[in-house]
Length: 461
Image (cartoon, rainbow, N blue to C red; front, top):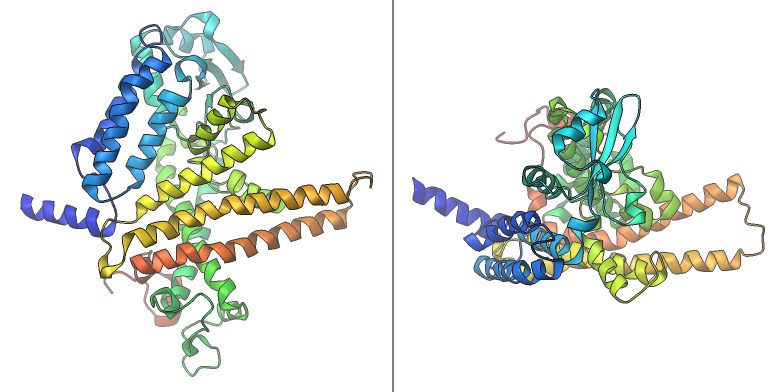
């Protein structure tokens, strides 16, 4: 029995998705909280780095070599360890923003055993917030550190970065509003991913490795076919050329899977008490209007989920500080951008198993996944250069922008972003084809399957 389970697990992490493969895989996750629990009067930041980072990095390398390559969790963990131990003065500058509901502020402060002069308080009619620095008392320090470790978005923390701290704490929603938003997101995401998966199911591009992104649609998708595979409601999508519709299908898969999973995972947590309920934290995705206002910068910096934004950009910020670059200047922005997308590509390469099924070459697929993120740096550079050129050309016109020009600018931004994604998303589409992702229907039931084939079930049918 145990041998069968072991063999199944080895098959999973070797051929399907990478995962824990040795004791060294878990060591960084154990050393990080131990390091952060040591107060600065015992070990300085440089001493802490010299003591903990070498074994953390050595264990990460051993895990990669033993497991045959990168994996998302261990790659993410080693960056997080490096940031919190070596690149940031966590024990000196980080402060946890505590939120209390229907409770006197002084009661919570007394319970935390922290000196009053280290507390910054802010009250409202329903919520009270206060900033808790690195605690002196061990029991409070343990809670503080355990709160920090999973807070990769650093939501509810001040870190000594004005750009981040000015947005904290996030404006909380009520539980009812959060539930309403989550229900809307879940329903629309379900329909979106069902539509994308149904189109991919009937388009051989998504399963045939020999077909390119611009290959013509199969005749079975044509509305003039005797038995069209598409319902009338989806047929107008075929007006779009293949090199536009297929990247949109890829994007819909990724976006809808993340938003649907996020909504389903967080909604049950609304029953938790106030400090832990998800309604106090920002939604997984930001406003889409930011894409039309700021292009790729709005797409990746505001609208798309910010799970790894600060973790991956902080190494760039640390390098900018070391070089003495002006905060918020061109050099600082460039280093943060390169750091964020460089490390994001590296982390996402860990989605590819060491030995994919079907004779797929793992390193080629990893490079395709990484390249999608790395080329975004070029997109940012082009966008910023064009923005500066437009500002230079428009200088002297009084700086006033009418309604029509605003609409035109936002429409232009949207076209630019869609065009850029249509040019770069095929990298992820090719990787998904190689790994066989599109050959599996992502939902157990399908609305479109019911409409066309008369059945709801997609799994085991």
